[in-house]
Image 1: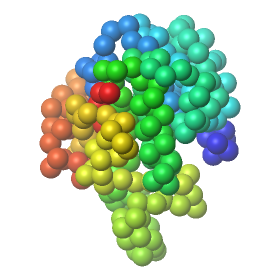
Image 2 (image 1 turned 180 degrees about the vertical axis):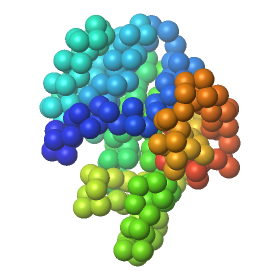
Image 3 (image 1 turned 90 degrees about the vertical axis):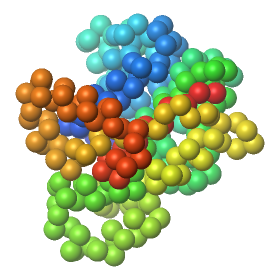
Length: 261
């Protein structure tokens, strides 16, 4: 919570810096979320997706662990005339503020890579399942195990030589420690996503789609972001078409699971 309380503006701008991730994620949302849906955005941060979806006519409730994110999201929604309906300060592990089967769509666009305990990840999935209506849609994002390689190549290639063993450790167990420039996080193997989302005791989700959020381009984001809009759109179209091919997943930093209850 304290990490995001101190980095609200940085987090708001994150998806502007990661333009392909944002573009492909919104495209998936438009494809899979029915019109006029009631949406719970769990861990929605400063509200990028909540605000966009509210403008698209959905009924959105934003919940986040950070008080500062919630305050920022309220102000941003008001400034942009985005009718986000509710704001809650809360935790993905405890959605007791909401009744069973009360939402058409649940978004977990962050919590599952901030929970380093397998039991906590299972709990977050179970809570999302509980509040989702039968047949409802879930979208969940993940950081891939190999994201650290793209990150180092893009931003600090010299880091590998300074901490080769640390990189090997992250690749082995998926745990990224906060002293390495990010809050503690869990980086998942793509093959582990569907079993996690299937839940425990039959209380989980049926996969509709598993896709890379920025296949091929993650390591060259500054180049991609600088493209003129028509050229960027061509690359976005190609990346979206290929995003469900497992052969592309190792080149991405984020994965998106789309499923139904």
